[in-house]
Image (cartoon, rainbow, N blue to C red; front, side, top):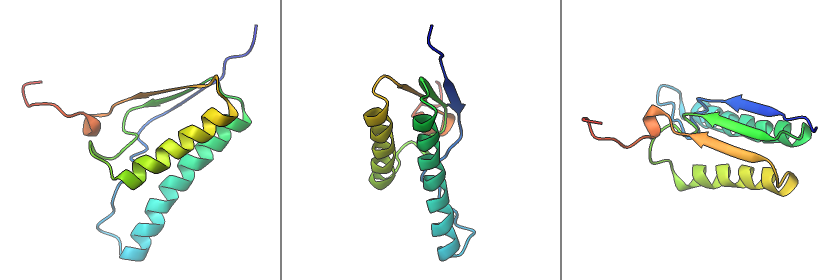
Length: 103
């Protein structure tokens, strides 16, 4: 029986802004979050992970910028090209859900 490797993460908050930082520092921090996401993909590929579970808050808000979505899809595509049988499961976080006050 083959090994099953699972990576579980959450609260990545890609696309988050940092208005309390100066502009250069904010851009550096935003790029850091994307770099860590790329590193996560590299880890998944290197270790032949069977399942990547992102349990909430992949994005920082319900309507992320297209640029952020494009970067995420590119990373998922990289995983799929290298490991076509690896499954990626994403559950929404509270910030990503669009709900009425009554549920």
